[in-house]
Amino acid sequence: MSHVAVIAAHPDDETMFAGGTLAKFSAEGHELSMVLVTRGEGGEVGEPPVGPKERLGELREAEMRCAAAVYGVRRLVFLGFVDPAIEIGERPKRIEAPLDVFVAAVARALDELRPDVVMTHGTNGEYGHPQHIYTRQAVWEALRILRPWRPQELLTWCANAGTNAEDRLTNRDDPASWSLDVTPWFEGKLAAALCHRSQHAMFMRNSKTPDVASMLRRLEAFRRWDLGIVDLA
Image 1: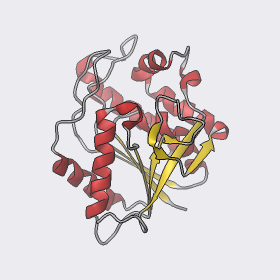
Image 2: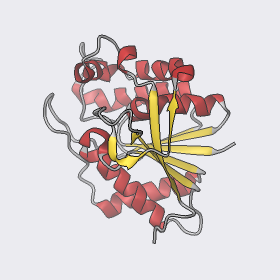
Image 3: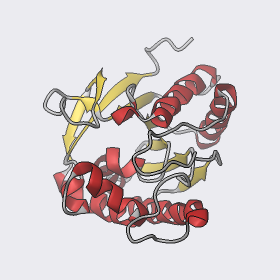
């Protein structure tokens, strides 16, 4: 069995982009860890609100712990970076931390967890979210400096499998190494998504779907980067 560590920018990213695969890994007995860059405190509070804006970080951390429990996550780590506040319709922002500080935090987390496989955001940040792109960059740079230990491979989600090329979440510059119909594990993905209550209104508004279940993708595609072959130096 392998140890898989997910590194995500915000609570809910893990489920929206890879929830079915995580449910599959869990069912197969793989060890799962999750590293969250922020608590998502800059996002939406929901409709109706799940609580006051000033408590959103605390509330979304609780939502993340709920989702992690669905997947049977062994270790859940919050790096403590602050998610910049935005209003509905405003362009997303990335954290204000310098890259070297961000990279060092990611590298420390990976060195402590020692996973076999790392899973994170794709090259285009899915729908172009600056923090998703910044997170992918920090993970890549962290992998450069990890010595002598290093994970065996990196998986980036929402890869371009051809059939999903027009999906707004697809990282078009990441050709898929493999894709998975997650229908057999969909109930697990849905259960985790339902934990993220503060984000449900946003999910449905952006996807133009009537409910959370209708919004979730049943195809999940990944680009595989073999870290024993890829030159990170």
